[in-house]
Length: 305
Ligand code: TXA
Ligand code: MG
Image (cartoon, rainbow, N blue to C red; front, side):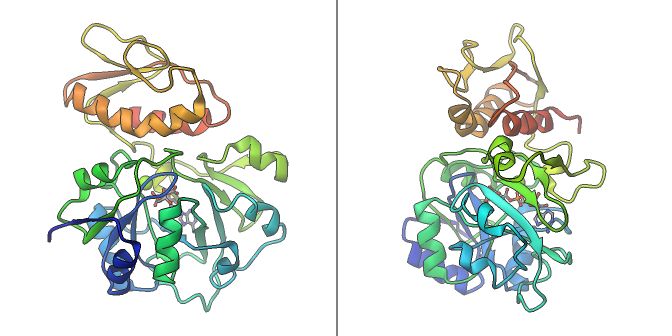
């Protein structure tokens, strides 16, 4: 199959309605989209990513109102919906009559939903008119894509099309908040923990790397081929990433938002420079705001495989 690069959302929506796969841009990372109601489309998403089964996918919707069609709305939903459109995913109880493929939820009785902010994604969701399943558009375990070209690097020939939307502005995946019982932070991401805690009060961190409910929770993830050293000063021949380290610069001004936007792009560049046998030395990143999400992804990139 030849993977086409599209700029027209109507054309992309037509492919999705026919059960095909279209990688779509979003403000966080590019997603690998398929109709969340179609078992075949969702099965093909798993196949294209080479993703272990039983990892549930995020369902992308055009607005907060659409969520009620698929999920039971918990108390306080309105206060969280204020983060939409944007980089927040909510895990909610699944409605019995949701009509989603059970492959999307991996048979769980909860569903992850998100309303993305990227104008191209929003236009696509309007044109498609249904729930769009979309994990990050990378082969399982590899670095998430923040450019259409990154998607083609990993999935060319395995999906029908990639919809062009430029560089992802946020650059790390959405924050995942579990709301099936007491609120729990399942994955740090584009909405800082502090912003959620301003609404909900102190949040427990959920997830357990030994029993992951989210692939972002698998310890080794976002992995370049070479070895990654954290909190490190680059030695001779090593590739440096950091703030003003003289190597790949996440943000010349030390801005964590800019650093998040550059992170996966620079990990790819470091991967290219270091190759299989090289070493990537990452300088310390402050552990607040988007630094939580950045450090989470870096720890996974450095985890032994
Ligand atoms: O920013 C993002 O979230 C991107 C864009 C494309 O929206 N998507 C993304 O998808 O990162 P993915 O599949 O790489 O990560 C989604 C995470 C997974 O780790 C999955 O396990 C978790 O959401 N998830 C989905 N449904 C869940 C559920 N019912 N309970 C717990 N975790 C769930
Ligand atoms: Mg992913």
